[in-house]
Each structure stands twice: as structure tokens, then as C-alpha cells.
Image (cartoon, rainbow, N blue to C red; front, side, top):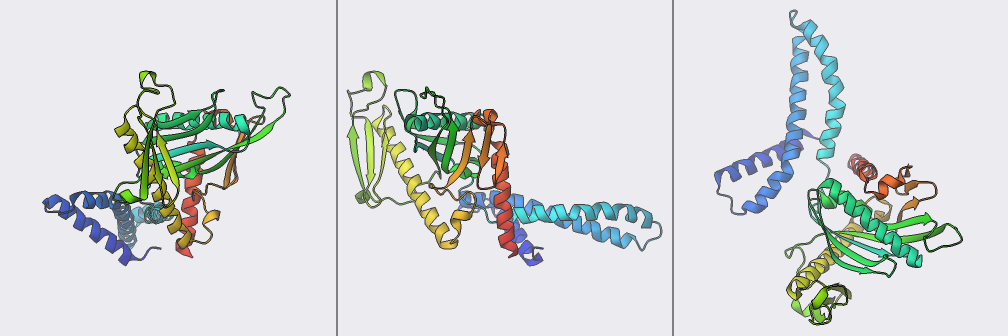
Amino acid sequence: MVPQDKLDQITQRFEFLEAKLASGSADDFAGLSREYADLRPVADQIAAYRALLDQLAQARQMLSDPEMKQLAEEELPLLKAQLPQMEQALQLALLPRDVADARPAILEIRPGTGGEEAALFAADLLRMYQRYAETRGWRFEIIELAQTELGGIKEVIANIRGEGVFARLKYESGVHRVQRVPTTESGGRIHTSAATVAVLPEAEEVDIAIPATDIRIDTMRSSGAGGQHVNTTDSAVRITHIPSGIVVTSSEKSQHRNREIAMGVLRARLFDMERQRADDARAADRKAQVGTGDRSERIRTYNFPQGRMTDHRINLTLYKLDQVMQGDLDEVIDALQADDQARKLAQMGA
């Protein structure tokens, strides 16, 4: 079990933050408020665990009192039964948190192998995530979209804001494979196509410093649908990050807004690269872990003829493909989170 001195340290830090914020004398009020909010669930769990231990101790003392013995004998089994669950909840609360979990996310979807069918599948994935965002009460904003003539997607970039966005969606990064009869196929043969999904935590300026000398900004005329602004003003923006070669474009009507959007996406990609480098340094077996965001990993197969979805990382198969494509993703994401937590708990006990 977790050493008591560690629980004492967390409780003392939480109480210090609580007193500091209540006094109004905190210099870094925003930073201390974030730390306080992060520690509060852990402190609450520690308090509940210790309250249970106190109840157990009191019940054991009551055994020596003839008048209270019967009551203690009734209470002790009930209290002891709660202890394993309470200990596990405490261990989960103490797991190292991904600091990016509470952040908004940048979602990028691109077709892989499969031509037009892959582009159509990418469009299906976009709708799936849009519907999932609706069920969670998140705000879903498409910031860059390139479509094919048949309604498929060449590339889409979206910003998703809400509570716990990255914590839920970070498991979606990787190659999504589809098996179905394409609408463009007259012979009725089942084809296999793929699309790549990347979910990046939104980065702030303090996270990633981008010197002006490291970027080149080009303006051009928008090529999408947009009424009078199309081909009349150089509003679209393309930003090239020279050291990495990353290129980001945005084609809204406002050039100022396009710069803001493109810089936000660029920061997210560079921040993601830094996170992946740090992960690689910490764990040589990173690719074997759930939720790593490895873009080349085939994570899931959507088999339409059999109506099933299989997540290969945890060997989970659901025969509810229609519901999944309608945005019913909680069951698979919950399973991925549980597996991730189990791995981390195993590492803590190693």
C-alpha cells in the first residue's frame, strides 16, 4: 500500500495551497489554483481512505466493550469489505497524471491506403467524432477542410474544446482500418482501406517558443467555397516551420484569424513532438503501450459486413458498429483508459 509519509506530504501540500489561496496573498494565483484543483481529488480520496481506517480502528476497540461488541462484530466485516476497493481508488488517484489531459485537442484526419474509399472513410470518422463531441457537450470547430468531389476528405483539422477532451481522445491516434464494400465498387467486393487519426493537445505560447526566424509566412488566395472572398483577397495563410519542415495552412476569410489558427496548430504539432521525444526517453517500449499516439500503429478495424469494431491494442471486439459510427465511443474509450490505468498500477508495484 502507499506509504503514509507520502499521503502526509500530499495532504500537507493541499492544506498549504488551500490556506495560501484563502489568504489572497498568492503571487502566482493562477498556477496555485491549477495545482489546488489537481490535488483536490487526491486529497479527498486520502481523507476518505483515512476515515475508513479510523472507523476500522474504532470498531476493533469496541470489541473489548461487552455492550458494543455485537455492534462491532456486525460493522467490522462491512468495513473490511470496503477496504480493497478504497485502496484501489486511492492508488488510481495517485497515478501520475498527464498534464495535457485537461487541455483542448487538435484533431487531424487524413486518408491512407485505399484511394477514394479511404477519403470517404475519413469523412465517416469525422462525423463519428463530431457526434461523440455532441454527446459530451464539447465544442467542435473545423478549422481546415479539403474534400474530394465525392464528399470524401483529403485532410481535416478540427479544434475540440470541453471538459477532459484530450484525456478521452488521446487514445484515438493511429491508423484506423475499414473493411467494407465501397459505394464506388460495382462488383460487390470487400475492400480494405485506412485513414490516419492524430489527436494533439492544444499548446500554449508558454509551452512552445517559436522564434520569428524559424517560420516563413506566405499568404495566398483561398481556393474553397466562400463567396466574394474567394480569389479576391489573399486571406489564406501558410506557415512553414523551417527547422522541422512542418507546413500548416488556414483558409478562413480573415487573414489575422488564419495566422492565429495556423500558429495554434503549429504549436500543437511541435508540442506533440516534444512529448513524444520525452516518452521515448522514459520508455523504450513506448509503442507497446496504450494511448501513445504512434501514428503508424494500426489500432482499430471497422468491419461493416460483420457489424463489428475491434480495437487491436486491448483485443476488444464490439458488435455494435452502427452505434460506434454514430459516435457511441464511451465503451471502447473507457476500456482503453482502464487498461492504461492497469499498466500504470503494475509499473508502480514493480
